[in-house]
Amino acid sequence: MGHITPSLYISNKFARRGHRVFFAVPRNSVARVRHLNRFPELIEFLPVAVPHVDGLPAGAELSADVTFPVLPLLQRAMDLTRPDVEDLIRELRPNFVFFDLAHWVPESATKFGAKSVFYNLYSAASAGWLIRDLSATVEDIMRPPPGYPSSGMRLTTQEARDIHEHCNRDPPIAGELKIVERLTISAQDCDAMVFKSYTELESQYFDFLSKKFNKPVYPAGPVLPEAAKPDDADGKWSEWLDSHASKSVIYCAFGSEFRLGAIQFQELILGLELTGKPYLVAAKPPVGAETVEEAMPEGELSGRGVVHGGWVPQQLILSHPSTGCFVTHCGWGSLFEGILSECQLVLMPLFADHPINARLIGGELGIGIEIDKGDDDGIFRKESVKKAVDSALDFAGGIGAKIRANHAKWRELMMKDGFDDSYIDDLILKFRAILN
Image 1 (tube, helix red, strand yellow):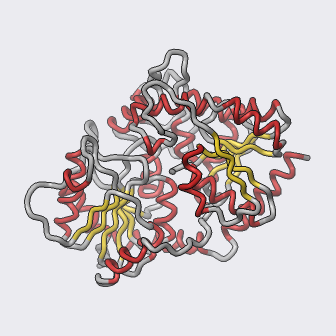
Image 2 (tube, helix red, strand yellow):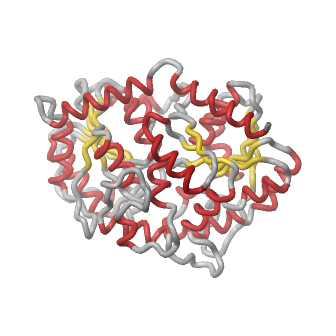
Image 3 (cartoon, helix red, strand yellow):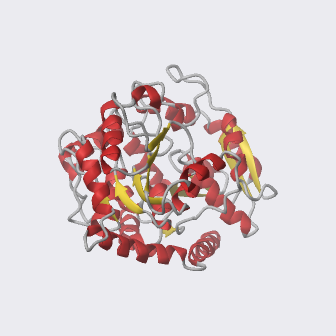
């Protein structure tokens, strides 16, 4: 749900201002997101059947439904929806078509007189780093591309190797595009690029991308979600959090798509145990395990922690007075939620855009502490988990105090009355100018 949910958030922003939104979504996923639609009279879901592709698990529609090696097959299935999507565009005649990884949308939109908007749900900093020439090597990806605003940012060997393998590898289906090709075509062919970000945070990266692709790049602001409706399932988490002291709980989450390796999962749990603090981990079962329970470290644990293999109400948990630390995989949306909270941020980047986000948020802005890991193997140990958490929570003149001060500054900006709305209003004005 990592792409559908934030796209629905911005749809709610447009609908609040009276704009009609048609939201094309895989057929079986409509029920998963319907509750997030705050304006059903203006936002209409358009179910799209996802064709089956050999090798793709039955019923798979979202990246959260498959493992990374199978993602190219899911992308192929999404490409096969093009005729149905074009039928919708022809019938509805929208002014704008938002898309993310469907690189063919600009051509389809133009065919029927619509403008295409590449709504990039990654940071502009990561887009500028990742969208490179096909000839880029692992060594190239470790360093910033020519003209990149932050010349001091670096990736580890393992991080660059993972990106190269994921973005530049040949797909399993002959003739299919690599991910970096899809991103490049999307950026080159769209009428405008829009980022879930804001000028105060990434203005230099917007300028870099605008110059590189010779087209407008607009910030949409943080696109904060509308107030969540209470859910009966939230009660058990509130009750558990209520039983702990203020700012004592460590909350750890890795998004809807990512799985740790079995050893890394156990090192994480053991590291949290070493802190001596209560903890709540929300994570998919690690690679090779059916449940989180079967993957837990051997031996007796303290009983201070809860490890949950399903969805949890992250906004509720982060805003609860008992939660004091957020260990995050550094997905862009999760980082924004972390900054909006009063929790100290501990950064555990896993994949793709995550390391770049971590270097930006932790290294350049000083809002969080990154967990140390091996340069060549990307492995972190339980001791490094404990060290990062302890440092983040050291307020007695240590780095924790500096992080808290920096965090408070950025949180205050994002929470400023009208801040989020001003970006959406400005974006709509820019769209009107494009039409005129």
